[in-house]
Image (tube, rainbow, N blue to C red; front, side, top):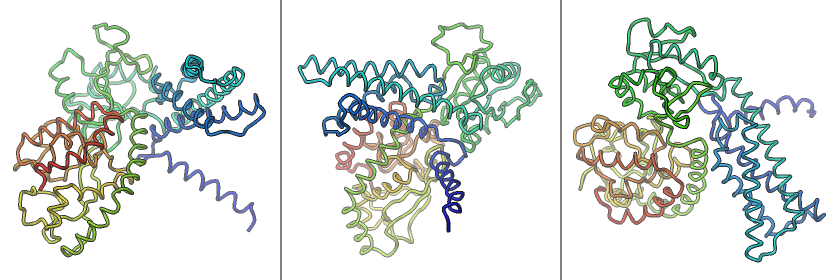
Length: 492
């Protein structure tokens, strides 16, 4: 077989792998992966620029450990500075001209600050020729990366792979005007799927741009989850307060950005109060809990720490598996469907803690103290939460996080009532991936939820975590989780 016969098949294979790497299950480009790729390229460019500068100025490309650490340290600082300037978002990366000033600011700030700090503390700083050369090459390489990123994003947008799936909420003249303005000035980055409205008259469909009427407000939540909607634009006039509040109450549980159109509003606020899509002014009501950058960082945190924790607890898991096998007949692991991100069902792994013939896959009946369904080994591993350790496999598979709201079974109840019937904001906790541990759990809200107050408190803690997420908060929760388990409160 010749190389000529191999080459054609190799190219489609490479393209397929790249597509699988960046395209999500709804055939759209993953925005977090795009911004993370740009950040990685930035870091590699800064490190490579240091090597090139060393070779140009000193005629020597051999690196010492000090120079390697220095290059990576500078790369981290520049990337951090660019993130603070909101450089790592799809909307920012679309604008090549807007990125030039951000890149120049970040590079100059980091290089000059570090050079000045080295001089002030009396450390031997690199020669001015090396610093200037490194800085110039870094600037050139980062600008080239920004140019390539802008072109790639424009091409992906034109192909419909990197657009924000959008629906209009509300009909009538307000919707007509907004839709026409968006198609005139700002719809290149949007894919407007249609209109939701409760009114049955033809005003919903009067727009000069024909759009499908997708249903009423009752249909909105399911549609957004099924279709992966990114943006909701509410066109109900702000003067219709009751109707607006009714709509927003339904939308707060969704994993979407929510904007209220201010196109026809007579109220004029400070320009900073508005977001703009094209030239259409919008009032920001709610953003997705994690930005594209935050999602990329949290995914890395989950994979790296999840792999390390799995390695650390593997001896405990091996002993537990053996104890379960010796204690009762049946499989070591128990798989259960639970609500996950975007209210989708995920299969969660646990160590089996009940007798096989008495297992309750839907959790229709809560486990209580001295529950006869629970095995002797199961009682211990439930109280210590060892039964949850196999969920580290879910973390590595990507359908759970290390930290997040705990996933609940489909028929989980507070007393005799389903969780979602007790707490109005219940589904809002599914705006992020569920976690192996969470803010509610380390604050004592774990185990049995036999009253309405218990599930209400748990959801309140979950929503606090979602609204206040940070890497430091995640690390704090992971660090104190073992200590919170010592109380074993309400865990049967």
